[in-house]
Image 1 (cartoon, one colour):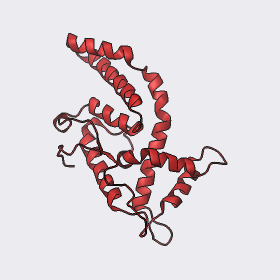
Image 2: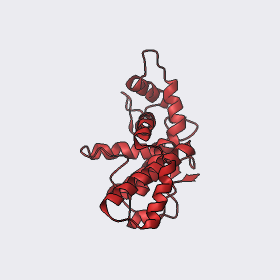
Image 3: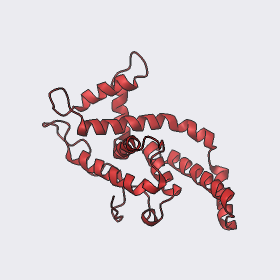
Length: 214
């Protein structure tokens, strides 16, 4: 079981630093190097914004300069984000459809049916098959509850096209992601399915010691 490396200050004083951690895990759940690169770049950009607004402590400024030396340029990072963002959305939509989706008879949609529907929606070419959707689901299912929360968040806030949410809404966002995780861990995609949609313990989740409410 993996936990988001968040500290308790997110409850009393949420910040862009906390969002950067969540973002990096959502985009690259299986690639620690890219997560660290993204977090470094985010910290440098946040520090630059602060530097323009206030006079930073020399020690903090020195730390930012050290990070900047290793951080990837923001434009380069933005280019790296497009594909994992699309893949994350696919995983989030799979989880939402597996939990809430119904077929014409009112029965729960099977994962195979969901894969085929999403293949048509996100097809990369005329000969695409559902295997690429299955591969994405396998890689991103451990963070699919976070992506489901993001999808529902931007649906409820259509004027706020942010990722994954506004800073002031991060606790609401995490609460929503935990709700999706619990549903996924307690719901089968079919009555005779051997396991639930999400396996208990596989998802990257909020630290157990953190207590928060919606």
